[in-house]
Amino acid sequence: MPKLRDYQEQAADFLFEHDRAMVLAPVGAGKTAITLTAMWEMWRDQHVKRWLVLAPKRVCTDVWPVEQPKWAPLLSVAVAVGTPKQRLAALQSKAQVVVTNYDNIQWLADQKFEFDGVVFDELTKLKNPSGARFKALNKVLDCPVRWGLTGSFTSNGLEDVFGQCKIVDQTLLGRAKGAFMQQYFVCTNREFGDWTPRRGALELVMARIKPATFVLEPGEYKDKLPPLHTVELRCQMDMTGYNKLKKDFVLDDVVAVNAAVVTQKLQQMSSGFLYTDNGPIWHSPHKFDRLEELLEENQHANTLIVYQYKEELAELKRRLPRLVTLDDDDAIERWNRGEVELLAVHPKSAGHGLNLQHGGCHVVFLSLPWSLELYEQTVGRLHRSGQQRPVWCYVMLTDKTVDAKIWTALHDKQDLSTIALEALK
Image 1 (cartoon, rainbow, N blue to C red):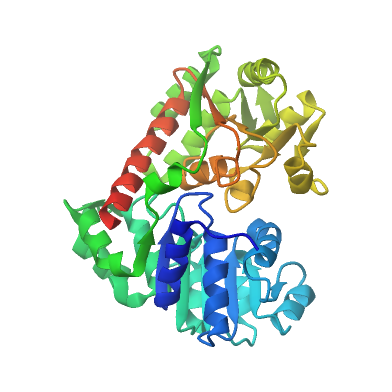
Image 2: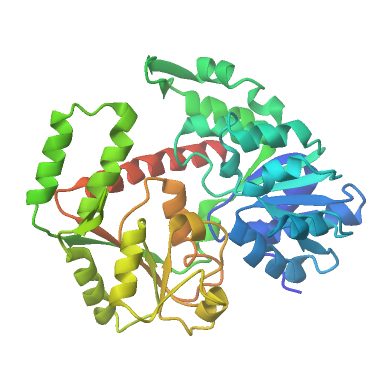
């Protein structure tokens, strides 16, 4: 059986000693290994009889069953994913650990089950206490032991912290989000519900949750990984159509309610196409031409290609016949064996938990997600424990477009995450 590293041992001990706890650790730091070790020790010492694990779907199917034999071989795992009949069979099995995905929470709430321990893998999935699955889970889940795992606690703002803490331990930040917002935020626009953190709010919040939170020391962890090189690939296109679209939006007096829709339209244009009522219309191949040049320059090294829109994937398939997607048979296994040269992924399907570090060390973002969490998690599919080579991340940005604003926004949110982690140390 493999051995945990020192920092992983410390994290596992922290979980064992705290019934309500969170582990904040970078992508690829071994959160699954840490947690399985602690789960096994809790079961061995009869503190927990049966565990429930909630995770993104692909993490349920491709991570927990794979990691369990390495770190907790005496625990049995049943994966409750698939048809209702398959899920029910897993739930009613005698397995000590049942793993299911967040999309099944409302189904789970209607079933009879007994768990005295729960693990929220990728805790940010429960950041919205007003969400239907949060409410459904909160009503039926009565586990004395609750552990939350995440690598992107504050990626999209301090406000997200409340829901994550509430599902783990309501005593950390209270039961009511309204009271939390009044204490730590100032309302800057009541019409649109815009709130800004008060001065020093971040440090105060982190101080309150620190006793229940294990934060992996970045320095100790980073020494274990090869370097990550991020390269901006600037592209140019004919700006006539883009500028006209942008001008039309300005004339329409765009407000915050539909600003997200506008941004998506501009991002599509930055990638060379635009969705219309009659389907996608292409006006520039600049990013895809540059992508082909990059693949040639890198001598066809095995590469993850990250897309946002279905039309981007369609164009990739048209241009790159050797392209594989996660929906293809045994895609992950073949990738990790080095048999797949090009693997197309969407951040929402590949952004959490998947181990892809053995198949390559290059990742290209055709277009960026607005979520720092999804960006970091996607890069972390390659830049994680077990990667033997330097990782190269290429970000494609069309000059003078919204691409630059998205890239800047990610950096701004990244600064908030860094401050939060520092405050917890």
